[in-house]
Picture 1 (cartoon, rainbow, N blue to C red):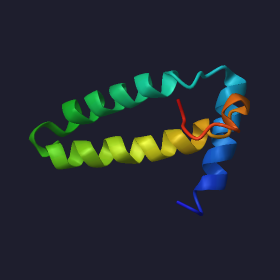
Picture 2: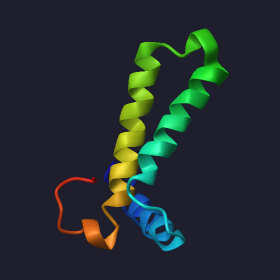
Picture 3: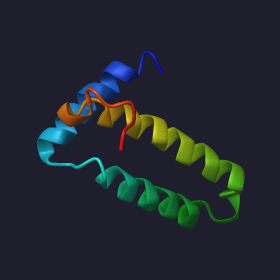
Picture 4: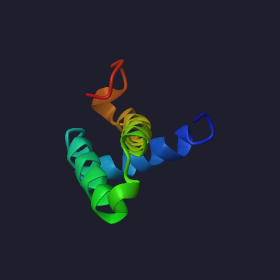
Length: 77
């Protein structure tokens, strides 16, 4: 994650500039999981779901941490 953090921070800054709100990430994450479940069918196990939710959580947290209002907060939301 150390190598990815700077890239995700820049991506988060750009998304902030596009008007993406921190709460929007939860919506996108939910849609992502639903889409994966539909596409993978029986291969979308609970283990796969947990891994995707965790991965998206790390990514979105890193992106949101770049938002100006989040610079001094401990959490993403």
